[in-house]
Amino acid sequence: MTDGLEYTELSQRVDRLEERLSLLEKDSTVAARNVTAGDYDVPVAEHPHQLARAILAKSDLAVVGARLGALAHPVRLGIMLSCLEGSTRATEFAARGDMGSTGQIYHHLRQLVNAGWLSASHRGQYDVRDEALASLTVILAETVK
Image (cartoon, rainbow, N blue to C red):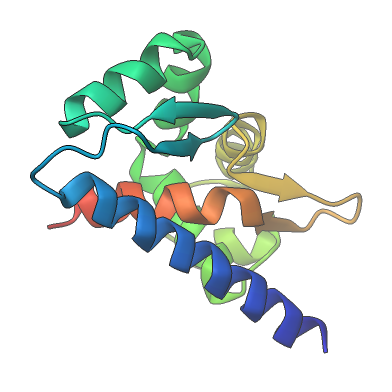
């Protein structure tokens, strides 16, 4: 039953994300509406760069840089992929053979957890945070064109 609930919640989040993207893609004004970006409500301006400017102006740039920087490593992206495919432990990531030593993997896991992309349980399991999925999807969709 939780899988159905999680699917419904994820589906609703994707629907909201698609709605937000369609607003950005409109070529005329949408000035009176607001979009929630993280913890901020920012006005949707006439151009996407105005929305980006508003989000960055209201953000802690060090935090934004750290979050994005945590994804900017092939091993960390591989860890994210492995988590999305069902692997959850450092030993499973190491078994792939292309992520380095267990110590290196733990270093990368710490970076991803500290940046908010992964959650860590007390049993040494790692999962992509539900709150991070929408952002991750948008970043990847725009990066891998």
